[in-house]
Image (cartoon, rainbow, N blue to C red):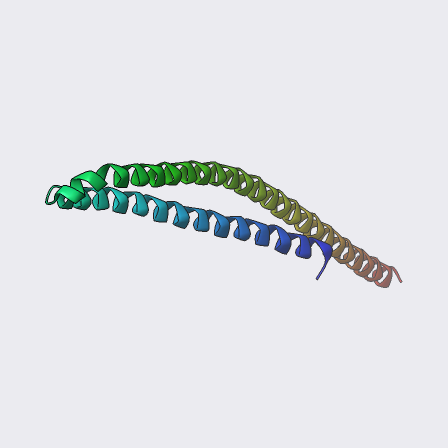
Length: 142
């Protein structure tokens, strides 16, 4: 395995690693959005329960404040996830471009080597044909 193959494997691993990171971020983002929906459903249930008793009506405002604080924390975390997702997407684009550039360079090098080998083979064939022709010509002359 030569240096280029190792470098290609490294670039592919980097792209795969960033894709895994993006998938993890997306999973966390989905989980946070689900938690926000759960909070809203919880508020609706508690609001209905609070109307059933006097103690519930008194405790409901403090419950709402704590839920609002949690909701704000979740929104803040979601914004952070969005930033991290955008940064990871940029990293993925850069890593993918690096990988494709290296793959292209490798293909070009392989193509040049194949052309060189074909030219060498053709030169050997030409030389053999010339030698054969000269032998044939000298046999006829003698």
